[in-house]
Image 1 (cartoon, protein in one colour):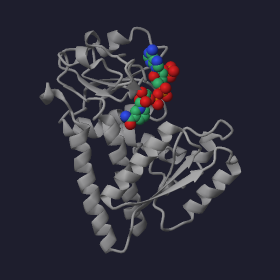
Image 2: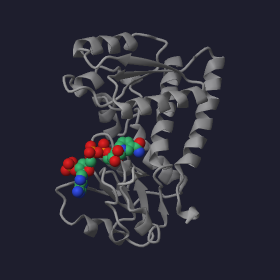
Image 3: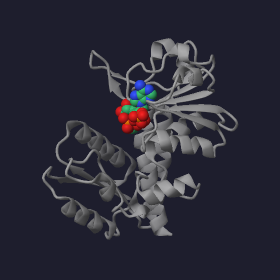
Image 4: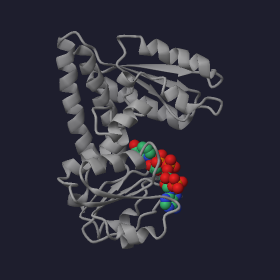
Length: 283
Ligand code: NAP
């Protein structure tokens, strides 16, 4: 079984080593990569994610600052904070932890981030540049999926890839990245008829629906590769993905585990993007 797993631990550790070396080289030039993370309110899941991001930065020598703002902050006050960080030359990456409170318009806030510091890759400028294949900060989770396929030696050229999910942060961008690798991409969502018919034709299935055990082994072609983006809790509170691992494992050639899969790649790519921004600033 183990040789079928594409381990996020292994791939992300490699990325982190590269990042560490790049940070050291930048430090020698007097550049100190820095990430500012804004968190609004006290959503426990968001607080856990943010804590993980700071820990990763510390491990790689990236300076990180936490800007914790109250739930009651107005949109204008939040925008002012982002403008301040946009103008702070010591800051290379700005991340606003989502979700935001309901009275704040997410789109306006995200797009206030300078595209040069948008290490999450969520601004309209970065999304646009990614779509036309220009240099950009690729969003961390979709890029993480592609990194895992690269690591596993899965060449997407000419492959049939089915993406289940069409969110702006996972499904759509990962479809674009796969298309850029010359895959033939089918995107499924909640209105798609007979998803299993489509997944059974796929060489690679990338599943990002947010539903436990959504993708089962009988929906796959023998030898298919599965990238499981989902992060769910099962009835026992145990972390699990969108793929039903037990029924998929005998059918697939490779599969990513949850936990220990794509989630770690998301974290690693945030570091990679922050260093990229610091490098750009030093040019
Ligand atoms: P999302 O915004 O809720 O989108 C879910 C997508 O799945 C939507 O496009 C939805 O279709 C589709 N969908 C839902 N039910 C479906 C069904 N029965 N049949 C077919 N399609 C269905 O979720 P997301 O933000 O993309 O996240 C997806 C999963 O990935 C979640 O488990 C999330 O926790 C996880 N995630 C993990 C990472 C990571 O680092 N590993 C990062 C981000 C997200 P419609 O558009 O038609 O509604």
